[in-house]
Amino acid sequence: MLRPTFLGVLTALVAVVPSTLAADCTREGLLTAARSYLAAQISGKTTELKLSSNFTYQQNNKVSDIAKGLLSTSYKIDLNRSTADLVACASYTMWISSSGSKPYVVGTQIRHRNNNTAEIAMIDTIAATTGDLFFNAKDTQKYIAAEDWTSLPAASRPSRDVLKKAGDAYLDMWTDAKAADTIPWGTNCERVEGSRLTKPCGGQLPHGGSTKPNGMRRYVIDEEMGSVDVLCQFDSLGNMPDSHEIRITDGKVKYVHTITVNGK
Image (cartoon, rainbow, N blue to C red; front, side):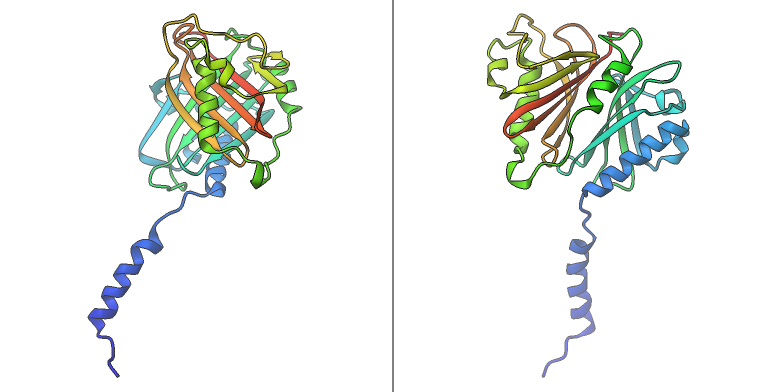
């Protein structure tokens, strides 16, 4: 009987180790990082965040110093919700502070490199406050708090491709006259633009008219929640930092949320 040599055993171990060390981007890891972001926002202490060595902070589409951004100030958060994208290894967190002296409605995408959810590579925030488009934090909170955001059954979850196409088609409505008709609108869908509620959300839609497409699109797609969030620059109506979130249930658009900052 032949015994494996030490070198042979070592070679076998080396072959196995890389696969065992390969990290997976997990839902719990993404949501844990999102919770750490919310905790830092509540405390106003960015030192509580575990940031990568080449971390980037972006606020309203501009790379900024995190120590001078929104996270450097403590805010009471009255409502929040997060979704997770295991393919992009990113999360989207919406939070609302409506009870303080300076109210905010915020949409933030958090990104991780190499599937490492233990470290945050980028915090990308769209932050709307008093004076921004249709802004009223208390009304926005009231509408969104009443929504149903339970996880979808596996058999009825929209695909990643369907969700991305819906997000892109929505942002293309201002430049493409046919885009609105490609979106599967639900008869009971609700659209919250800033603090304006429209029901059903498939009515009163643009059908082209602008020559400037909405650019700088960054996606967080969560099939389990049936949602896509797109951070972008709303160029069709001006240089406006923007977040558009869409939820699809039973194959139809159920919710649309927009956070739009006046061009600054």
